[in-house]
Structures are given as C-alpha cells and as structure tokens.
Image (cartoon, rainbow, N blue to C red):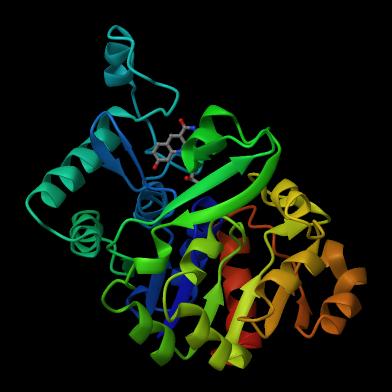
Length: 310
Ligand code: FO1
C-alpha cells in the first residue's frame, strides 16, 4: 500500500496519476481538513471533496476544485438575502455539503462520511481525513488580525501579508481511524506537491503523524510544490518567505526534511539539488509539473521508483 499526505488541487492531480500507475485500491490518501469551514450552516471539506471529485473524473478542470459543468443558482438566490457568497458553492457540490452536514448531525464521523462520499462517486481509493476532530487553520495577518483559512485564501485571495499560522484544535485532535496504521504499514509514504505550510502542516500537527514519518524518513518521498522559486498554485511561495523560510526547493527541504528523506524537485531546480542535499535531504530531479494525466502518471512512476516501491 502507498500512503499519500494530501492537500487540495496539486495532491488530487498527483493522486489521479498515482492510481494510473498502481491499482487504486492500493492507495490511501490522508487528507488535510484544516481548510474545512462552515458556510450557510453547512460543513464544507474542500480538500476531501477536491480529491474525491478529481479521482471520480468529475472535477472542474479549469479550477481544479468543484464539479465540472457546475451551476450557481443557489449562490445567486443567497445573494438576495445578503448572505456571504464569496465562497462559491456550486449547486451539485451543495448536495455533498448537505449530505455531510446531515450525517454529522446524526452523529456520523467525518471519516465515515468520507468513505460514503467516495463510494457514492465510485472512488476505490481510501480517502481518510487526517482527524475526525475539528482542526482549523488560522492565519494571523501582518496587521495582527486573525482570520480563518478560507477567508484568507478565497475572500482575500491570499494577497495579504501573513505573520503566523496555527492549527486550532490540533493539540487535542486524534488521528482518524486508520491514519497511523496506514502511515506505519505503507511500503512508501508520499508527501504530495501541496503547500507545506497550510496543507501538509496541519496533517503533521496531528498526534503521532510526524513521529511515525520521522521514524521511517528513508521511505518517505516528498514532491516540491515550489518550482523555480514559485508556487504552481496558491500562496506557498509567499507563505514560506513570510514565515522566514526560502521560497525555493531548499526552503521546502528544510520544512519537510524532518519527515521526508527524499525531495523530488523539478528539472528547473536542478542547480539547487546540492543545496537540498546539504540540508540533509536526498534530492531527485525530474519533470514535476503535471500538465496532463500522462505527466501526473509519469511523476507517480518516478516517485515509486525513487521510493523503492516500483
Ligand atoms: N476556491 C476559490 O478560490 N474560490 C472559491 O469560491 C472556492 C469555492 C470552493 C467550493 C468548494 C470546494 O471544495 C473548494 C472551493 N475552493 C474555492 C477551493 C478551496 O478554497 C481550496 O482548494 C482549498 O481549500 C485549498 O486547498
């Protein structure tokens, strides 16, 4: 079994490639829930849904999140009431949040619901939220004001300076059933090309996760989401700089080095490989930009090879 620590769009694309390289039943994704939010009374789990929809072949290919061919009639209707509509929930996507919220109200755990949603979309890969307990990524802006993750990411379009990031609830959150077992038993653990601060950070903050990975660091392979000093998507580059790290594969290696013995970097960062190695992390150079499904599968095959799981 291959275990993958996963955030949103980048991780979903990598997972779609991985399940073309190995049987999808042999993959377990441990998914960030620090981005979860409550909107209009509904529990939204963006990263779980992004991974599920992508593996189901139903994701909006333009955005990488939400459903393809989505309509937004409910959002337009909510506008009439002056309700906040900056976070665009599509009409069919809303059904997922209604279902999840209803099941949570009946006492179901997030991980049970994730299984049900994946089964309903005929996704055979196991998708486990990092925890069934609430953990919320909170962003302290340079102004000192603290906002919830989606407010920073979507409402402010992550174009504001950040002072610090914390994962509210992480101290008391238990890993969801199966998380620690998957991380211990996997032939290889992959850290997907997700934001190391706000996508992978919350997963690593869950009790036991970092310890297990540190103990098997030589069979943990991370893929850099930073290519040539820039994030392919989102604010990973800015956040690394703002938090005092280099916005480069070297900065990623310093962040993830304690848990990942190998970092896969893009050809564009070949010159930085010696610096990554000097930081104590083996560096493998190959094309990492997943332009299409074939590129994602080729990246997955290379990761399996360098991780000794090919
Ligand atoms: N991202 C946006 O930039 N704008 C949106 O309106 C938005 C809505 C949305 C709805 C459902 C969903 O599952 C994801 C959505 N996202 C949106 C993406 C989401 O903010 C990010 O993918 C993650 O939280 C970061 O990984």
